[in-house]
Image (cartoon, rainbow, N blue to C red; front, side):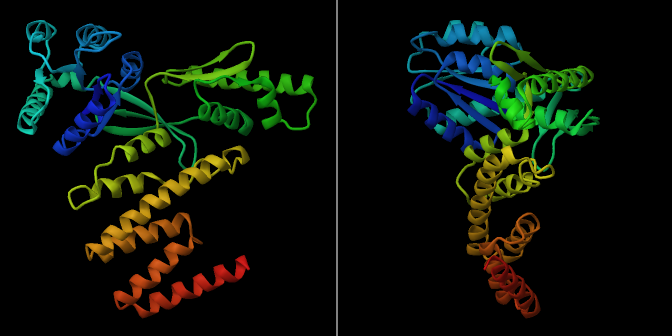
Length: 359
């Protein structure tokens, strides 16, 4: 399940989010202290359930629930409040449950069980209608569709590599306007303004024609400043990956498989296939986050005496980052501890060659 927690008190948001994570019933949990932001994100993320505080200063929870259910009638609502006087009104809105603060763990677990049972009663023909579209940026630019749990890639034939690069840059800056001057300097450096403007208009036209053929809700908007790529309900792998990293529970035996799953989601560096210079800062930033995540996982696996899985993580790092010094040292250590002297020697020779090349 995907859940939203909405409460104007940040501490209350964090506490409930932590309790929900501990149930293990949720794939992702997003928390909001701003009701308007929650409404906007609900239209994009399509949560299965919202845990909603009733007493909020700008808009009360009952009004917010009405707005959310008006946009998506399948959203399940669980109200949270310190008072029970709102219960009757709450259940008039088809609320699944009503939790009094401070929440007790057994009572919350009971509400989660009710949510799960309610989701299972959704008619099969309603479930088959669910489609999700997304964009991948790890390694290369790809579009995909998920229908009935099956992921298929959407073939795209770019008119020019410049059109693909312009789309990729606007995707990086999505929902923000980028000036025409910035785009021209980025993609056609050294070209005079008149020619650069013509090239930009032509490339934008090519992208728009391609976008018309794709079943994805994205548009290029123009204003006096420049252009903006707007997206609605589209998952972007790098953004989704970072969000899920932030939401990970504490690393322990019950959760480490989720850590491994997110490690493997990182297929390659950000737009690695194209080598875009403008993408380098983001490429470095994301790779550092990924490596730190991997090192944390390796150290945990070694502490758990799970050297085989630790070695597997190291080898996957080496495939993407073959010259990473810390990984090579760890592989040498693991090979020695596992009795693979030949493997340790081979890795040491690679390590030495890499050090010599850097010097």
